[in-house]
Length: 259
Image (cartoon, rainbow, N blue to C red; front, side, top):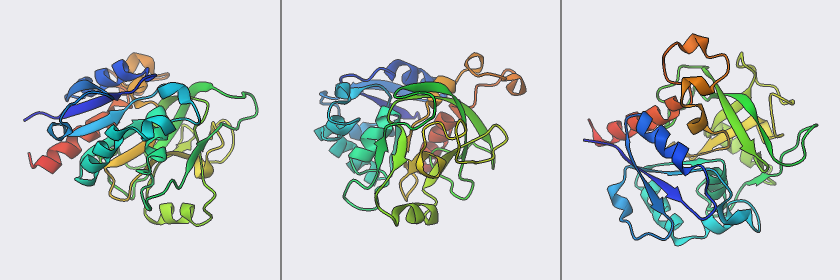
């Protein structure tokens, strides 16, 4: 049996090809699905919303795509345990569609403009993240405890924030903050450049309580091949670390199917 992943294409998405390549490199089958197609989503094991500027990020990033009827279908599939990954603009869509953090049927967070001392607006660089070792989800099954992933970011509005004074504590209690920005040794400090965008609690990625939906700002599809990642000597001829997130999705789906 194979793992079939649908890569969702909205108008303005521009990372769909790299994402599909990463899906296939991890040993899964993948297909590009347009927002206005009539595909039966039940045939897929999971869904990835790639990065870009869907609908030119008009009004605010991700909000128009979040209102598309397709997102209601994806939400239904997620409620049935299927995996959903939102990368960069895809993360913004998941937040705007209320799927992340998913504790109430309202928008609980925002991905606000970056704050850093040197660049106003779009910022592209390599950062480091590590996953929450206390929670095994569809996205970190193949990661070692405290493993640090070098990974690129490329966004203007990637700062996780909220006006809900109690939400951060709730997310920490639920172990929903799955990825945090850190230095290359895994030390988490809330300062630039370790925290590249001023994100609350150094948040790089948040999952739902069940662990099958993830919104992350860094781009794992851009760190899936060895030659793309700086200082990769320690990885030898293995795939680059970003691919582990896709390999984890594959493992999760296999576990769900019981094979």
